[in-house]
Image 1 (cartoon, rainbow, N blue to C red):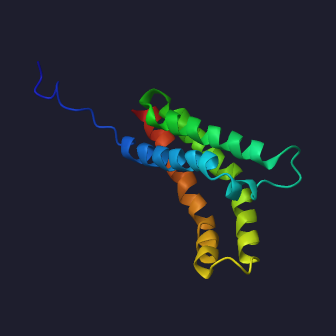
Image 2: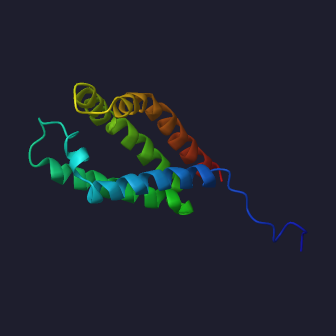
Image 3: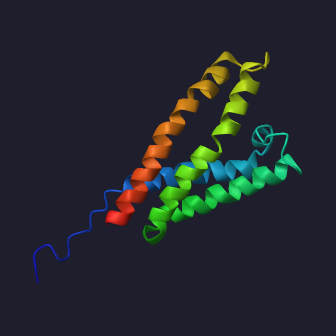
Length: 137
């Protein structure tokens, strides 16, 4: 038996995948625990109740979180996470517009809401790296 036969397998995409999974899990749970802020980001032109979209997107985030956490589905989870981060960008822009125009919102909240917009780029690129890493391992 080779010396390294019992050595742990190194999975370079594991840690970033679990970080993304944790982020999406937390956000998904918040869609159910505190749905009101998410309701306000649902575009008004969509048919039906905003709360239904809030719950549906929470389920999607929880599902993608699970896909990222399981090595066998990690590649798909990374691609789905990237698509999700692209898809929710308009809602994040809407939230920033609403918050910046809200005189009751704190300055710190306004700044945070605007600064989070460019953070979508590293979330998308990290998701794609996780997907590639999973395919290569």
